[in-house]
Amino acid sequence: MDKLAVIDGDQTRCVYDRRKALVAEQWAEYQEAKSPVHLAVIRRELHFFDHPEVG
Image 1 (tube, one colour):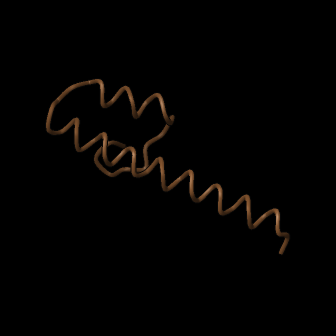
Image 2 (image 1 turned 90 degrees about the vertical axis):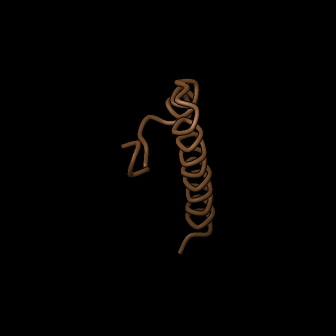
Image 3 (image 1 turned 90 degrees about the horizontal axis):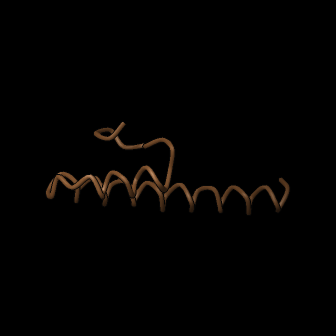
């Protein structure tokens, strides 16, 4: 396997994990505060959500 492919795969996974955590955190804060600011943060950071309650 190409070393570059492994590095790119690891970076992609890291970005995915970071974004997934951001969605989970912001969604929890939205559920508590009902402030659309939290939804705006999610929308600004990514175009799709990998979170069962968000979509």
